[in-house]
Image (spheres, one colour):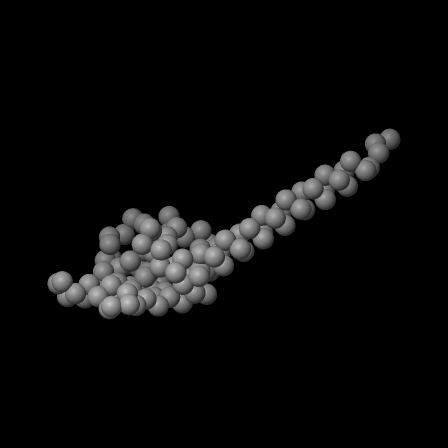
Length: 110
């Protein structure tokens, strides 16, 4: 399973995190697939930066964010875009199913 999680960097008592795409079986600071941003908790404004397009692409591929990563993505607006896209696709699927069922009901079998 692919996860979006934080990769700890920095010195002792001065944490700095990269937001990375990683196989869930890897260690916390182990090998990762791709880095999509960073989070600096020591900065007064809790500065973070995320490549929104890459994050959205990985979410659509099925990557599961951890709680902290989800919070950061929510603040950046990525989760809202993801929910809108997901809602739109499920709505279209339901609409297509009803159209197919209505077409089948209208046909007569001889």
